[in-house]
Length: 381
Image (tube, rainbow, N blue to C red; front, side, top):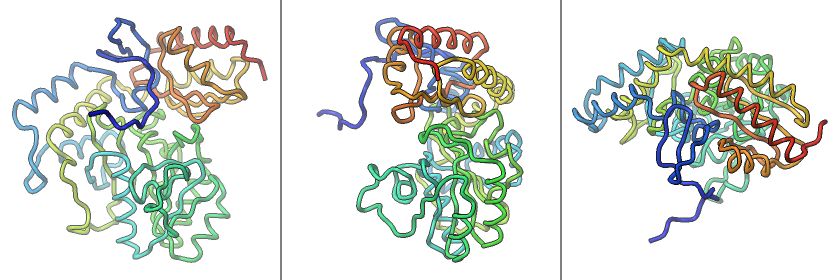
């Protein structure tokens, strides 16, 4: 049996990882500035993380949500303390798409409405409702098409208000920082006005922090650079440092709908062990502060490099846009300099390293990045 051909693959087979480094089966060491697509938050194979999951597996690895699982409450308590959202309620699931799907369902149940507003260049997942509100027609199958999805330009508050006035919008969903769309940071004034208008017209505001959350931006959630208080916050990726886990933080003003939300694997013992370990390590090693400091260093250094059209982002969520296509840059970084990076479209290099990235590692990347740009003769603006 063959695997279904979905992804274009680099001819690299990772076999070991530690901290911010990955080794392949030929013994090559790579500096990981992609974090497995923003998933590795506290670093690869962190000893405390490995120990906590191993110890949990020796006790009990899984039982269904028909019984009390104390680790779920421990995770909720620690998440509330570290994020500053301790008055929210937590629903645990398995992935970012599932988190968004459940947030939209809860918004629709709560308001009795059907319509959802999202934004150009946004990405919210590949499940039914999540893909329908994602601005990429190529991944929307006919079965996903719906007249209930409205996709508007980011930061266009007048367009949003025009839609909200009809009072048929269940939810407005926006990424704290757009990831796949190219690292676009919503204007603070836009988010704050958006929150105000949602309250005015009875719609719920959902902050998609799946990629931008869990400390990546230099705040626990990227929206915390503003005064906004969302009705729901969706999470995944860095939440489990590689173990599948997602969640929805739900405002205390929203009541539970028994039997409406559910999950088989969400909040299982192993997922909670991974999530608790991540939060403990983040707190002990002050990784949110580290993301802010190292991210500021990278953005400052990158902004000073010639040949770059624009540098965007916050913390360790950085987009580097070029006028020309970036495929040669990314490949030279990977195969010549042994540095993993990501991309957004054809023109943007995307940095999503573990939050444990050091200043020394960041400086090493800048040195090698400038070397690659010089070798490829990338022109100044």
